[in-house]
Length: 435
Image (cartoon, rainbow, N blue to C red; front, side, top):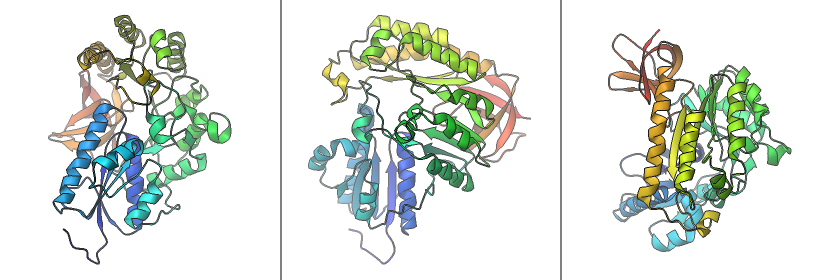
């Protein structure tokens, strides 16, 4: 066992899951650092304390979280760390079961238990640390949560069970956090929430996404603002003129439609129809010319037929999303869909997902081909081998396309913008030269 010393403990924070968890870990690390802890993120080697921030969204994510906990439980038994704590969605949802099974964990915490976790570790929760967090992403971009939880009744989703109902952060606190991030060198902010279009309804009595976008766009030094996870039902249309008129709001919208068949939209409890979805997407394109739409579909939900999948395939040709992802249904206990029979095999679910992605390849390729010859403003994220790698305003980190520029005869600093003439395009990447 490691011996204690007068040196403040080394804490290794391990993050699993989505961008919301990334923000939670960064805030936690900021709090620990303010209490003089030596904080690292997903570091190799021994640590005094390990905190695993888990994901519990779907079966694969739950399995990854459990395996990670077990890995550090073995490390603790081997004397490589003194304390092991677990937080996040999986811990929130299955605390009692996990506690009974994995005795090496010293304490389990839910998604709203950061103050208790900090006290247990020996740190104070400092309310004044607004926007002051330890970045785990490249320094030039950051995720910014505008709310917590979700009030939507989607049949397949366990998020409300893990993160509770929707709670908007105040506009003033979000703007202050954006200003602090910019002071720390951030140039691009991704606005995230479980449901960003619900923003403000609980706090101000009406949806306030438009005003929030307007106010954040006025933050000096903030060059790109990107909106994620916009729920289609009751979309706040007044946000569209702001998105169209503000030069630092990317012409990009992540709007997960999940399905297009009326029968499945009803079964999924999405609160919208095929007709209204198509009308909304058309209105968005008309109101924000040149916008790139990113969406996700969910296939394999109980009751889904081949005809329902055929509707998705036909709609993709009609809508022509610039960016698209697909998930397969995961049978989550205590959700509405859990009362239904999960009759499709994983093989069949994957076959349906693959058919959708195969259809999307041509659409994505056509969009990228349309950029050949144009000059795009690119934000460079990293150097990879003999190429600089960055993104246009149409692409979010980790999930979308990238722009590759050879280092031969070109030079750009990471975290800087540069104009790039696009010379080649494939379905998921662009190639260019600096102008």
